[in-house]
Image (cartoon, rainbow, N blue to C red):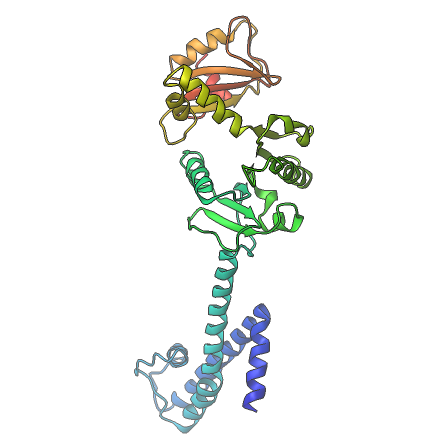
Amino acid sequence: MFYSISRLMRRIRRKRILGLLSMLMVLATSVVGNALAFFFFESPVQPELTIVDSFWYSIISITTIGYGDYSASTLGARIGTVVFIVIVGLGAFTSTAGMLIDWILDLRIKEQTGMASIQAKGHLLLINFPNEARVLQIVEEFLSDNGHKDHDIVIITDTLTTLPFAHPNVSFVRGSPLEEETYNRALLSGAAKVIILSTNYDDPNSDSVVASVASVIHHLSPNARIVAECLSPKHKLLFGDMVGVTLVYTLNMANNLLVQETQDPGVTVLTQAMTSNLVNGTLASTEVDSPVPDSISYQTVAIKLLSQDINLVGVIRGGQVHFKFGGISPVVGDLLVYISSSRYSWAALQKTL
């Protein structure tokens, strides 16, 4: 009989939700049954006893605390305590506690091994894990921005079994970045931004993997803001004409800086400062999303913004970068790139004009 009960309990515990609800119902029944039995048999000999006192006695008994302020003195109350508390209640209580602990531990293990589903919104998806130092630097840089310091970051990779570091804002999803199921667990539909890293900086074919991942994400979430790392500009065609996908040629940028620093010392220091959220005053961008009078040129805009400690660096229009502001005026769709300690909307920038 004991073996049959144990086997039944194991089956119930395997069916988590059903098992937990079943044990809670048994637990509630034992508490209510014992309280009613205690009140029925003890109230004649303890006139001051209330139904609330009976429930207090039942709860304290089933949790094995037992303050001793109430005790069963009649035979009926004692039998009720044995049946509802000792036989039924304690078993249900320990089983419920065990199931909750198992549930929590299982959830924790799933989170650590990247097999849990993510509960987040407006998060950053960071795809691929080339090395720990690189990923940690990106995490630190992203979260150091005032507008993103409380955002969640979800790392997706199939090369790790557990994340090698712990961070309160970082979660881990283990799975292929080419499979839809992985993005369902990472909640791609709720992600605000996506960064796709190269898988191997020594392998030029890494760009084809990144392009495939970008294509999958673009198909699953066409409006996703995707920034993809590309090792060679020659591989730009791999990405086709996917809207919302921006390519960053990291090796090219590094090589350009090496050359420029040899020719113009100080360029690297300034570039590092301008592109880091850790510095008070970094590059930011704002899109012109409402019309302005044709009479206002970017030259005038630059002067007025500079009076507010906003240094206009360039204007991007149709993929072309303009560093000289004479003769061109703001039009809807332009992207203003500037150095500032804050990021502004176009409506906020217009107030300075």
